[in-house]
Length: 72
Image 1 (spheres, one colour):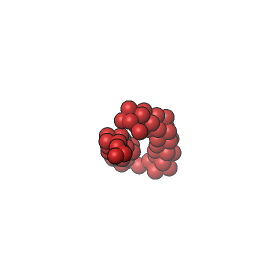
Image 2: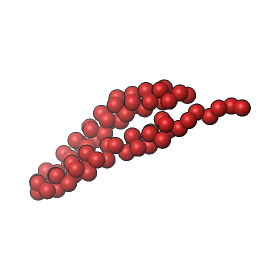
Image 3: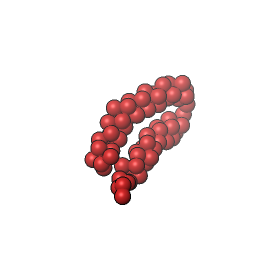
Image 4: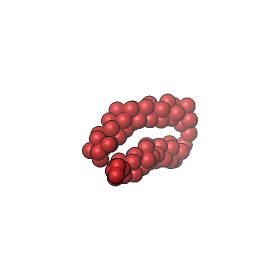
């Protein structure tokens, strides 16, 4: 599979599948975790959640940029 195809697949999966799912999950989790919590707990929660969404991109980058195996 070419690098261009891999990039397209990764972009579609991340933008249209992972990000909406993750955003809804974090909003639901925040609704149960944060009511009545001090402001710094909310700040920490959203700082961690806002950083953690990038994990699938970290997994997909090595796959996208791996050279295709050429058959001899």
